[in-house]
Image (cartoon, rainbow, N blue to C red; front, side):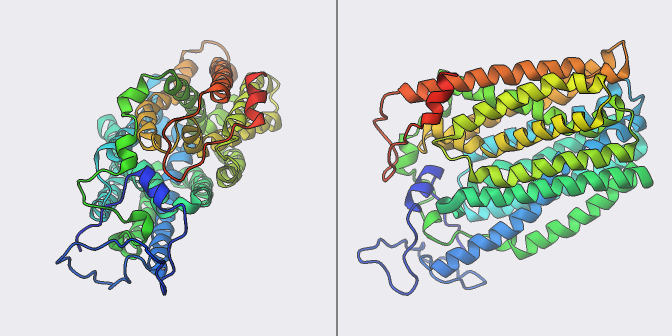
Length: 496
């Protein structure tokens, strides 16, 4: 079947803000979306494009299989902290720079994720055929990366080990913004918050399961066997996701029906170019906030088990269980916060969460000095929950600042700068190995750096809120969209 191109993100949101016409009776005067003449019949013989049943079935099939992929890939990414020290032992001393190989690889992985996803949503037209090919390539790269990583650890080869993160980042990049954010907004434009809450549930659950798998198995059988077992599990799950959903991925329903593949929608024509957005101080402020909390949050996620083990003298299994406990609150916030972060109050949410993280990071060295594991765990739970909340509300923040017309390009610009955040774990490790005092105090400087960073980000959010409360009315907004109301909460932030 000839792929039916989707409209750009803004057009998809605009045309699907109202429910589609019933399948049994077309609305009077409703426009039709003809299929290209001579197009082959789909093997599954789907109902016509207008059919609500076809749209719902396509959306639900896509969502179920996407959740499987997110559970595997994002669960691996956010739950891999128990592998840091075992891999460090395999490649060298845990107190040497080379021992941070896993953290350096994670930085490479995060860079590839965002370079690929950002470029794809800007430069690759969204078609069903292209999405099917992207899904197949992403799954293959992901499984190849795990296999190469296990082999590299077994042979203690640093170059192939770092190369494995290139494959993992490439595979995950496909499912990050291109299939996760972009297609989710196409299929769920009328209820996208619920779709992201569902994704957050499975991502958080996957992080907990992977943290336990990595910690328990690496302690029992070793890193190589652990990676092999997880790779086999992922191969089975991704093969099922391909057969059951992505192989038949197609766009049915009003949200994805568009014109010719080379035509641009009115919303895209009116959108501000990405480079022009980058030159605005508003985008600079958003990028700083984004990079600040990601720099600190990603470092904590990568180092969670290592910090428990090295600063509180825990065993590997104890640190794994404490890490899983911290991830439980991350799981809750990742699943619930997309339902709370509406555009009219997202700046309020960002301000108070960043302020809470600032306090938690500042007090963490005191908990370490007192060797109070429960207090240290509390601070990690709070910062992890804050990170989950902020991560889940990046899109509402960008929509609040730039509107739906520029949302597509603004997300892509933000993704270009996220690789800077991937350096957080490597910076923390280098501070740790360069510390000449007690090992328990080796991360104190990084915690203070994180406190200062998110504190400045909170001030930037207050400035953004003040600007939004005083900006002139926008002359051009997507058709059918009402002007966003300024909330009293934002005024409270601007005067805090």
